[in-house]
Amino acid sequence: MEACFSGHTVKTVSDTDNPMEVATINDEKAAILRSVFWEMNAITHSLDSVDVEEDLLDDDGLPTGETTTVTETVLRITVTHKTPEEMAAQYGFSDEQREWLSELLKPEYHSLWNSILYGLSSVGDGSMIEIADTQIGNVGGGSSD
Image 1 (cartoon, rainbow, N blue to C red):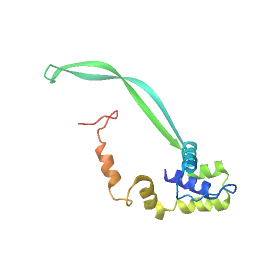
Image 2: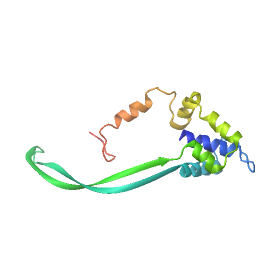
Image 3: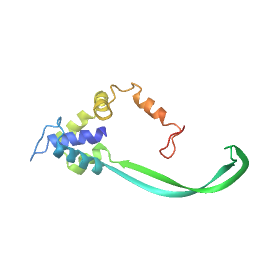
Image 4: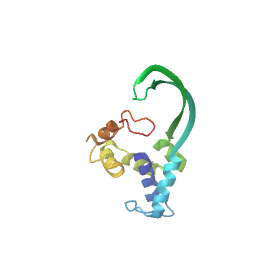
């Protein structure tokens, strides 16, 4: 998302026909950001059927020692994205625009982008790890409890 927002920033600010400041997001800028995002990212999916052995349970919910085969459907989601360099080429960025994009993507700005895009106060503050940790064992969007 950082690269998408950076590309949006350069595209919006340096548009020779209609340059705009980027700090305020209005409907027009949101539409540009949405467009850049979907030009940069693709989401595809597939459904697969797999046979799985399951333990049979008695009336008390305890394993009986017997198993049965059930067919489950597995949803596979693939997210692919273009690099900032690929997007700069797609948009025909000038050398100056490429320099601006490079500047916005410097490591010293990562914490700024994390704060703006994800609400994280700093890189390494543990927030993302805490969120990820709550998802361990989460299968199919349900809770592991």
